[in-house]
Image 1 (cartoon, rainbow, N blue to C red):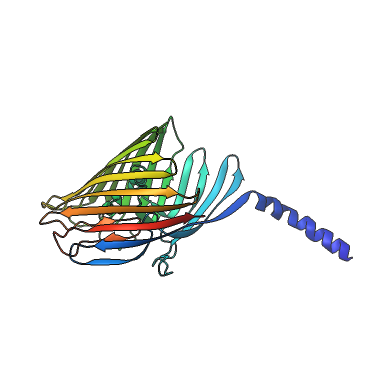
Image 2: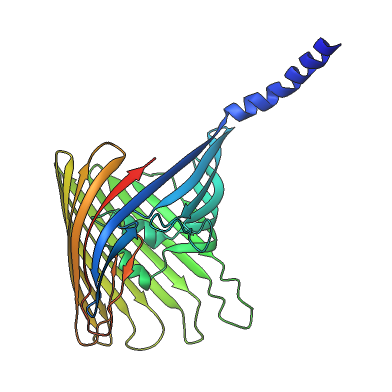
Length: 332
């Protein structure tokens, strides 16, 4: 009798075993810590930072084969401050999506990166790491979309189409803060070109418009990347524009980065910055890095330097922030 029960239990479990074999779940993460000497133009402070090259994080991602070339997917990614052990205020605020992928492309629902974020990430020479990256533009523009539905097409002769809708979930008698976004990317060999556009219904005076263009090219050990990003809210003298132009050179396990940046507002505020960085790979998953960045604000400027996780704001209007840092990054 016991053998019959055991045989029945094994037979009942076979569909579940087959089902489990068609899916996978992966635990991954990045741990990044640095010593940084930061000067906000008024005071200087030296301390330990988390995420100067890459934001420290831990995540779960997985797929399930649904057959017919289609699969389900999910991704939950949480930020963590390795210097204190604290988590981000939103548990999975970096990314939290579920969706489907197939020959039609990929559809995700949840908290996702915006079309402009995709363009900006592909055209930043530092990979949006190190102080002086184009992440400072997202002190103004929209990088992540909560309550969103997102689409990215499969490659069509190198072109990919992006589309997104983020529900502001505001009362109907107020500006809804809904965001609609589109993007177009082209990748062929060592060339990348991208453009993105957002419109946000967040003001009774009119919609906020955001747009970005980016390009990248690699030849041999040299990479060139640049981008132009704009936030244009309703009203006068508040349009924000940022330009970046960067180069990188790989030499054995080491890589040098340099980026030039300009920030400006239509009211006359300006901030010109640069950063020089070096990364040395100890293995495929571990590297050391160091870098220096500085941003010079004019008499109206109040622009900040951003690393992957840390924002160094000027201590006052017209102050010039600068930072020197050295750190270690490990991925798993």
